[in-house]
Image 1 (cartoon, rainbow, N blue to C red):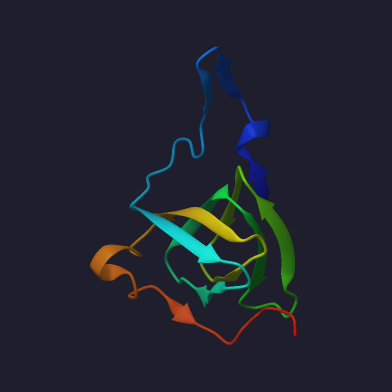
Image 2: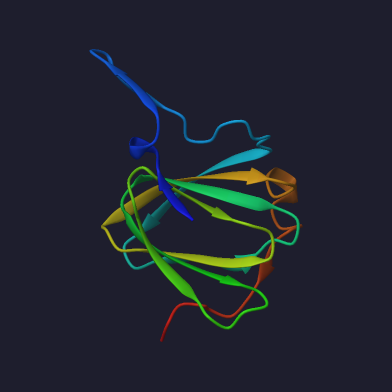
Length: 128
């Protein structure tokens, strides 16, 4: 499910805006990701790790599929959107804008020296 942080509860005054991206979750790792137009990231799943992805800038096609299902779901993400890939959910990102900037918040072991320990690659889930 996609959520836009600018549509959630926020605080705005003359100095600017404060909006929670994620609230009340134990985050193990935060990763900074840039991607050029038409490049694809992902096409993998995590058995134990949940991954929140926050779009800082850009427009992205997000593809997701439960490992046990055949249907792939496409969602358009833009600045301020947050999406969650649960464990065993295959996910992929394709940047539509010139560039994109994302932050990935991992709840689980995927990060640092453990980056590949809970990453299981699959053939592309993007439509042909």
